[in-house]
Length: 236
Image (cartoon, rainbow, N blue to C red):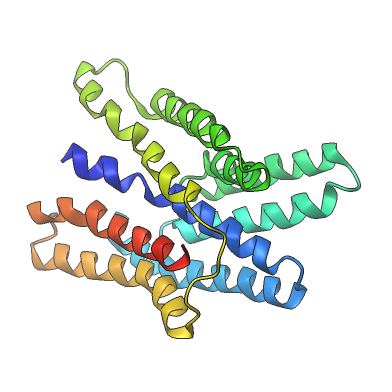
């Protein structure tokens, strides 16, 4: 159902926001930043088999990589950008372009829009001007429509509202108070583990149902969104 997919669009912007918060809270401690970077890479590798099974039914699929790889490259981009910015603004901008092209070459989830999301949120966090989010997210929605909608098929016009669901993430991002939430290793790794675990659960459900997506799995975006909101509420 369109309404559930619309709400599910909250997910990736909040992922990017949390990625930036993680970077800002670890960038002054190289050891912690390296651990954060390595943890994203580790869960990208762990998530790849469940992601491939769910999307293609195969253990290996070189044509589509999971969102943890996207976030890993996003964090790498922030690190390189901040390192190069004092030395050369041109090189720092080129680094963003190059890493985004690398994400495109790897075909990671959200690869084309990764940098737009990350840097629009990053500059919002730096300036605290909410208008940056509204303008940039609206532009991203327009770009998605241009990129993914086959305009020769009039029936697809009914799904256009889905692409504007990313705007629903703005209230959650803008109401973050900057304070650290409850610290718990269990919760931290539960949040990381949720992604590969929920992919495997959905894969086995699809197998149980004869390889077809059962109707009740339209609730998947709602479940995912509830999870993301829970993460954000833990830090507000």
